[in-house]
Image (tube, rainbow, N blue to C red; front, side, top):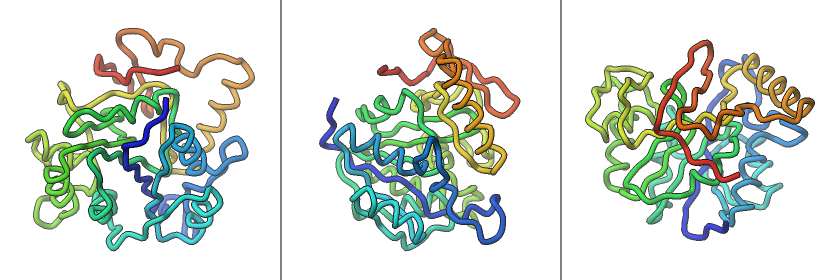
Length: 244
């Protein structure tokens, strides 16, 4: 499938503080010999989408140049939400926000099926992607999510979803059950690398999958998918339809 009408952003402006002082961006960590963000760039280009890398990190800019795609230096990058909001001038009719520190699984292609005012993809704890067509509503939602002092938000894309769905911001970083219909559970091995430990765990899972030649989540086509997040198991019937 080739997609030509989507504006795609890959956010990679964070300081990777949990990786230790002076660490380079976690988004350039190698996965099977390829920078993690480079993998997302390549997968996007294979769908016919030229993503825009949102960063001010020299090492990430070098990756963007290597893959011959544009990059955008955000005016604000205090939070994910403020980084996303900084791209407002570049938004089109259909937009998708990806995260540079996420290893995307087989559901990646389905994320680009953008036909709703907004959708949030992730788990009840982690967010991996947000897409939208209602630019005015998303602009206001990201403004709220970026203003911690006024709204008590956490700066996450999840805060924007809370605002859009009239869910109290003070509910915190975890979505509650039942989640809104605009929330889509991803449970196909997609995960992020917030810490070095999570990076090591990801590499081990990939190695195990390669050695056994089996799927990380063999139950992914069942009606209910359970995605292991940390030590919790979260089932949901709102799952990303996989195109494999």
